[in-house]
Image: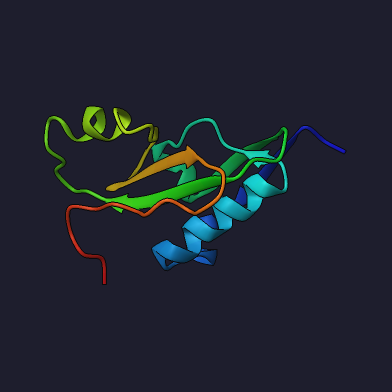
Length: 108
């Protein structure tokens, strides 16, 4: 089995943020991981094969985040994977109960 996989147009397949989060979480439980998110990852995302893990992902739209936005969440063990367009992607590994998401604004 290959050590990498490229998925084309993931943003068109997972339009609702909660669907995008669920997809990332399912991929991680199957052992497919992303290291960073970049602007073009809405067009294609490269995954690498690894040990299956249980992550909570958060798709957080932030057009103009506060200066302390990233450091604030990193202090609570959230890993900032990057940003595509105005959506920041976060993850945290967990055991047991799935952690709550966070956002400064409502997504509808």
